[in-house]
Image 1 (tube, each protein chain N blue to C red):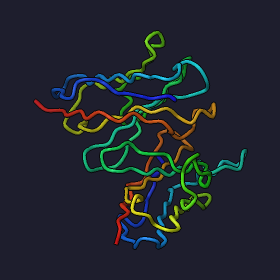
Image 2: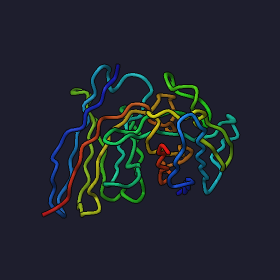
Image 3: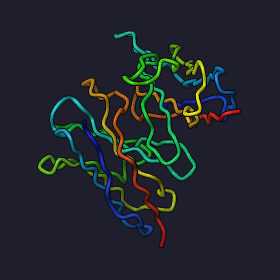
Length: 123
Length: 113
């Protein structure tokens, strides 16, 4: 079955760029009708959707982050990535990558999640 | 953005008893063209990612025990655990996927009394 794994630095300095990769195993990222997304969760707080991406085109971002975020796909390595620039302490969170249920719509919930990776923004 | 508000923030229920969590959206998440409510429920245990329990407001995911059920339409939704088990202790979130940005409720912590 499909599994996701986030990777990237656990510590990022303020004003720098947070870069994370989600590796997909057990299936091809470019097959099917799935959207792939990023969600984050500050320590002890709730969930915030960052954005979704369809491998053959179509990306949606949370307007609150849109000016700072890019989600892209690397089909040759079966990965997708998140870049968030100009980070501050408010960006400290567990970052999850996820796959939606594959209904073929840009509006579906997430049924497969990575274990998450903690990213701390601090000097 | 659609604001999702859950109640209560925390809930303590005895084993075997019923637990009910409500979720209210600031605007309807019912799509008339397909008659579906774009509302999901997740369960999150400490140190784990969220697990999808229910989507389309009332459709249980494969493998989810039938003691979990979802109901409601439009702006008002409920997650019910009919007979609480020890393993149900977790934080539960509702999520609307009717429009971008997707938004989640603040979470309800379900504890054993």
